Image (cartoon, rainbow, N blue to C red; front, side, top):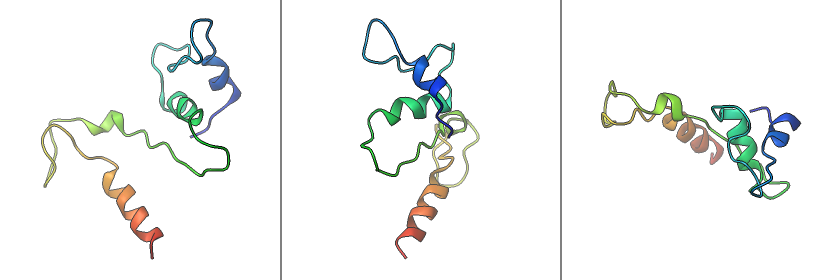
Length: 85
């Protein structure tokens, strides 16, 4: 996700250390990544997978319960599995 200075500036607030949603009515995936960035030590490789939008739905298939689709989980697990080989 691109994290820009605009995202960082949008988190500034007079009332707290940081504002976790920025200045727009909806936080957005890049703004969420910017928020998480504040908690990652310098030099640590990390990723923000924003799967909240498609994660919930009534049309889940296979071994996944009807309350959650599991979207993105298999892709992440496949990637991690390949990193261990």
